[in-house]
Length: 175
Image (cartoon, rainbow, N blue to C red; front, side, top):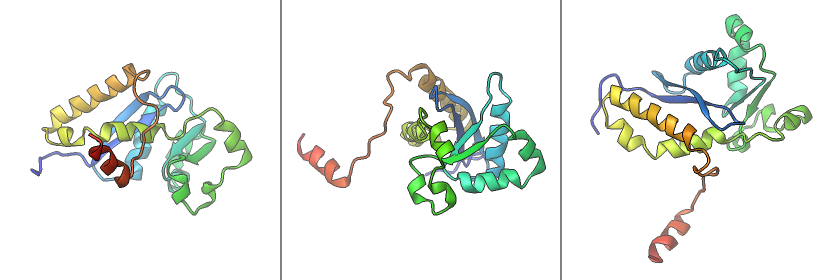
């Protein structure tokens, strides 16, 4: 695969778990950079009509420690009362956040915590196509993909299904 100049290390997306819409996105320069994630969230929280009290993250335990360790970030995230791990990643954690407290479970009563994983699964299928482009086209098509997602939420599958290798072989033989 050809290495392109100015290639991003990937993308961070902010989704509203209630509407399931992507509200912010940013290509980052260092893979899984907590600082860049925090910067994106600060920008997203500054958008009109955004008033979060809940942050769902695959590594909420470390992210919350990062926020609490920086005075400026602590102020920016002052409205966030709950830092929770999404359903997809929670079984992999050994920290105290693996078990939800009563107040957290109540807050999550009507929230799909894995919407970011559903979106990532959907956009991941486009990576081969996107990563072969120059950076300007790459960014353009990521933005177009986000717009498409937001405009077609009613027809996009709400759950990402996992198939085992055995199921995949069975499906191919049946054709």
